[in-house]
Length: 196
Image 1: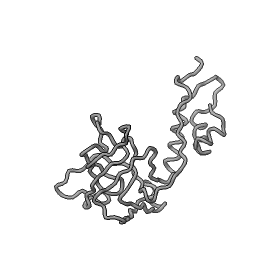
Image 2: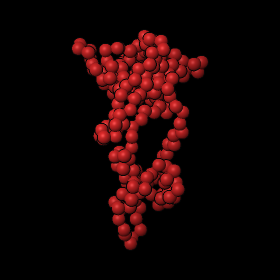
Image 3: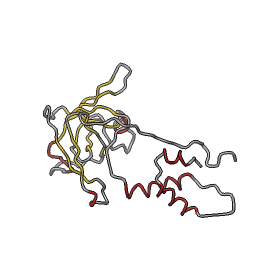
Image 4: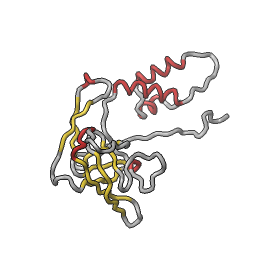
């Protein structure tokens, strides 16, 4: 079990810890509780109270070639999808956005519904874009994706005669993006019961 300060640093709230203690109960016998029980408690508590935001952890620049230069649109969306009483927020959108590297594949596996060369995907709350060109650095790493957007697909709309795209990816506007610190934690041990 991590220390209390370690648990706090990982983002577990007091309410999540209380729910965890309630679930595991009290026993006189030694017991090992799987870490997934604590994670599930945190997920359950945060699902109810956390506001939603868009984040890109490993960005690739996506440039929309047919976007009017200097134009900025705003999309209004709910702060929390299941709690409309929390209100709405405005998300700015411009001709250059960042998407996550995991949301693009040049040679996609079967069942990959995100962006591929020549493929289309919806940018969450925004437009459908189609990949036209992929730019790489000297090492062969993708640095930029050139796309074109379909204006009639604003905010979830699918025009008549157009096939609905299956993939939806998160994005942040390059012009309006903020840098932040993100702490990603994984299991410390590779076995469920270390030492046994």
